[in-house]
Length: 495
Ligand SMILES: Cc1ncc(COP(=O)(O)O)c(C=O)c1O
Image (tube, rainbow, N blue to C red; front, side):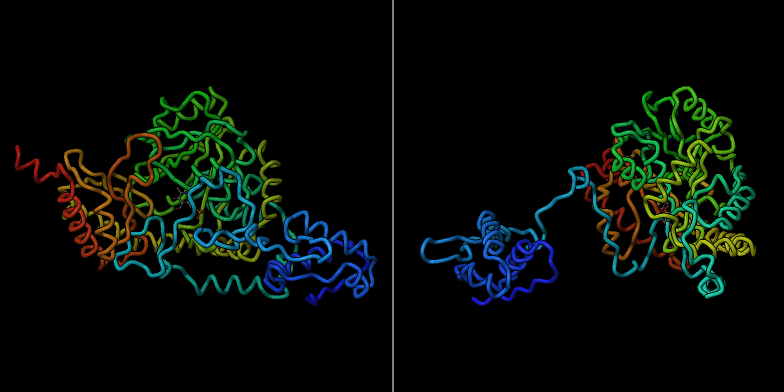
């Protein structure tokens, strides 16, 4: 066959011939059994030495793509492609490639698929309402950054992020969350997730013990695991993480003290103090994830761990994903100065400094008072939804579940009553087919016996759909109870 080969420049000519012949075999231009031109002829056509062509042929022969029959010539091997293509019965993608990720990554659960259509009764957890977002104002501020005159944000930036934003965030969290920080303590990140990743990168030695709340935030737990940590779950009660049960060797403790995720109660002041004392005694770091407590519906917030800490053991993580929108990927961390150089280097090596026009727009958004105004407005709306949801759950699901007390955030948790037996898988399936999106509490559990219950978000569902949505959850619980061997009804009949 007359296979087309083009050689450019004076590089490694044998490698060029090898690569093009291999591609021709792989994409089927050269088929099994076909004869290649003799080395002398191809060398003449390409104006290279015969040795150069022979080197390429020999390599392909050694790799099993070509075979030489004495006296007859060089041919494409009949089984050349079997080497690379999976057998037809295999379910693996033919273009899967020959390389595989490290074992850790093969075992890591993949991202949950996003649903194409929003559910009719959407109790998705941790998602804010995009209809409340002030698009008009945001567009104005981003547009301003995207003009030629605003070239300052078109340059390479500081790994810690936009200086104006760091200053604005420091003021904002100082007022709204009593976090003690100035601009130098802040690193702007792509959401809380990148903050968690950076903290893990600079603090976790391979194999180090990391303690997380159980039940707790799965994405944080997996991020620590991905960094080589051994992650252990520590049970949570009404006061928050049970400090006495943290394993002594833990180097890092990750908590959500403002609004325990997903149960909801704040960590008591007593526990906060105990946790800081424990961290001091054991030389551990505490990561305080304050992801959604800007939406607060009653009582004053307790002091964050970050401001109770007198020894620089706490790294505070904040996110704009709930306060504004998760699509913006805006978050930040507040860290003691001893960690700053490493965190900034880690940030630079990861993605340098994020997206400056968005960061600059947020700085202005805060400085113009728009963030505070948005939070006030959205809190009023979310408060109504929350009241409606709590009333509906108490009224319609009270037989099965009891709401866990909490006063912040965008979701509520309802624990299954201990005397009730319900097949939760069936509940979730029935609810799903009735157009209800919600989460099972079991999904957040790590080491202990799984807690049973429901986690219901009120960020996206319109108030007027809440009662009907909860009615469908009631039907799903009925189906789950009927499907469970020891259902509450049956037990009641028996007694
Ligand atoms: C506990 C917790 N932390 C942080 C986040 C926010 O993450 P990000 O800012 O990366 O969107 C969430 C979102 O669901 C969360 O539940």
